[in-house]
Amino acid sequence: MFQREQRVRASNEADGRFRKIATAGMFFQGGAAAIDTGTIVATLVHGLTGSTVAVGAAAAIARYGWLFPQLFTAYYAGRRRRRLPFYMAGAFGRVACLGAISLLLVVVPRESPSLVAGFFVLWTLYAFVGGILAVPYNDIVARAIPSGERSRLLAVRFFGGGLLALAVAAAAHRVVGGFAFPADYALMVLMGAALLLISALSFVSAREPDATPARDAGEGLASFLRRGLRIYRDDRRFRLFVGARWLDGAAAMALPFYIFEARAVGAPAASVAILLAAQTVGALFSNPLWGWWGDRLGKRELLQATAVLAATPALLALAASLAPPAAPAVTLPLFAIVFVLIGAAGNGGTIAQLGYLMEISPDDDRPAYSGYFNALVAPAALLPLAGAAVIGVAGSPVLFAASAAAAGLQCIVVRRLRER
Image (cartoon, rainbow, N blue to C red; front, side, top):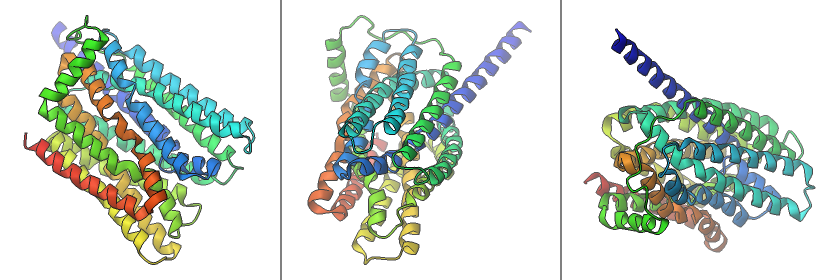
């Protein structure tokens, strides 16, 4: 009888953790939509600066700041049995940064040079502080959720988060342009901060399962870094995965610029909320498929499918940029399809990459593997800057062609990964 009660208690605890982690993910998705670098932040930065380079820089900072701190977080967090404090520092720290950005956009006059400088300082701080939480998040989720349920967890997270992101897109339709610039974007950033705060509180309430002691808890930082280089050299599967992620970053270098291409070929200025909603719909309705695919057919197969899908938006945007000018009644639906595909490919790729990294990371060394992997792929996050340079030198058709080519090469590398 006592053993049965223990099993029931353990099952209820596991179900509660699943619900709380999934809820945290849903609110994270809603918060991320409110500060999406491909729509909301892209148009905010362009409105502040008028520069495509600044738009590319904002996207690059967000991605690089998310990835780079993970190597050092992995080293320090991996030596402690409790990793939740690291998550809390990153989660609550980035909420504070977004709150400061919202206040800055309201208080500082639009014509003041300190507005742009202050935004980029706080945006950089937001990105790097947020990067602290990725390693403990992945490790805690991997310990709390069995392998056969992880893709379902991510799918539930993205589905519920997609519904919330649709509500954010509806709010954006009313807010952006409904208030004086940049106060309208200040409200969107504040909304993102509030949703991310709820996400953090839900995740913290799930509590942290006991951690497996680190494999080499006494090694110094230099030894830790050398071990990462050895893993990269000796583990061919890990090395191929890093290469695939670099090519994914190259394919994604065009993401901040789709919204401007839509405007350039005839979509109305108010289309930002519509295209954000389209991106959210693509992410939302593809989630059941990705969850089933990852758990039943495998994470490698899901990597392959999403790599193929990632080439499609660039090809459609390339065709639109080369075609004769068309009416908004044509261009807006076309780019709505583009953003639907971006949302579907982005969510599927995230589910596949997180799931595959958890699969290949040893239980007693998972924080280190996450840190090594993300440090190695972090420079690829700077590629939106290269995208801005390509637009400036050769035009958007060349950028979209390069993005599609990178996605095609990623398919080849992932296929080699699947053969192992």
